[in-house]
View 1: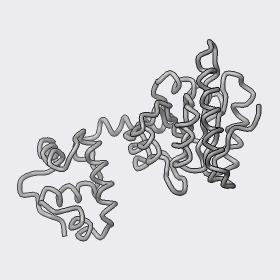
View 2: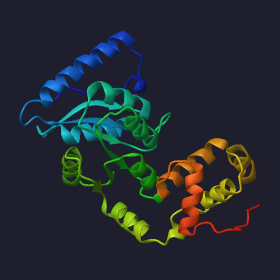
View 3: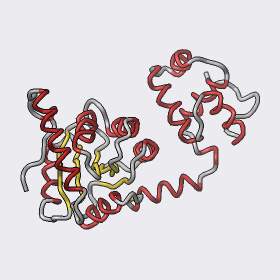
View 4: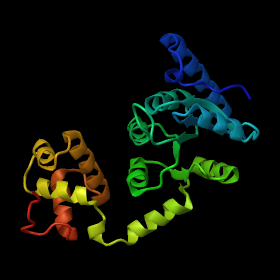
Length: 252
């Protein structure tokens, strides 16, 4: 199998016009292949470590049921290549320089790119799993997954089926069963209490000694967890669930 298209940011800067032309040609070829019966599942690999990308390419290369179209070393390049190459599945690392995996997943959804995203990472903590799934990831696997498990996961993701490693599935189950008070982290509750008290993002950031951007990130996580779309709705839902009560004291 020939080497898939590499990320521009992973080694050199080519001519922009030529790169766009190559992307367009690859996209047309991929569309044609996808229309044929029994066409392989097409993949884009996004990981900042070349050795990981090489290993994954080598893992899929012997199987004609898969075709790696390209590789990216960061989230921004993954988004660009996904739009150009139109893969069926994107294998996405979370921690990458520049645009990280969760931000890339969010951007893919914003642009209406229909590729399924299968997160492939070494982290299975709540702070990694939940934001990735909330952003729109179809599945979440750990990098120590056996080859057979990974291939099955990619096939399932291509069909639109949710795929979770056992440890991640257990975490989500415990989350679902957790009391409402455990739904939000301690920091998220602190942010929400300040919002309920009428503070702005800037004022909340100053009170908590964090950046305004971090406050915004916490609010986005709160909105997703409470299934609301704005500050007022988040406060109302928090009162409904008993996360906040009238007269809740502000934290220093």
